Length: 186
Image 1: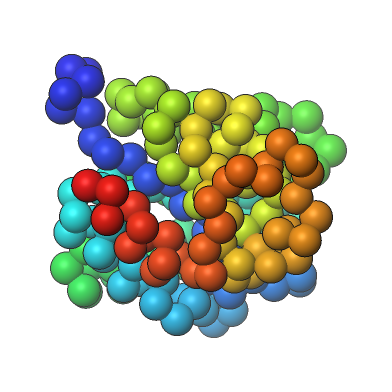
Image 2: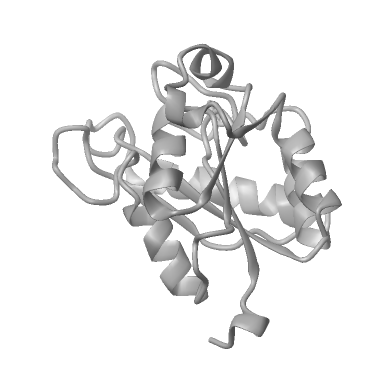
């Protein structure tokens, strides 16, 4: 793809960034509850010309806590909510593996981010990756992307234990503030 025509990609984690996090996993459509302002933030990014993708560890699949149909219903709802406000959500990729499966896609490994970059024909060096956990930030850094932390979900706790190599990253209270900062850079 011609770099001049490549999309301005933003990659979001799901649980804790877009919807409520749960230590017991988000296992059903009923448990999938958007965080206040997250859908509107995605819509603002979309309207500003960004392509928004999602990269999410979903080890609940490997653990047998929910199935692909349940996961699809959550992602369908997310797409419907974004579309109902006039926005567009791009590709959603998940790692279905457990923590000990040795895959290359489970964050903190960069596999999902690299896959999205390949699918969209972009380099990751300036792509914002917004997450709420250290593994999100580590995956972004491993991929050469731009890690951004939000304090929602596990983010406030993550902020208190950031290793030295992450003290320079951008930190926002929630996805809406991060989205506004990215839009202001245009």
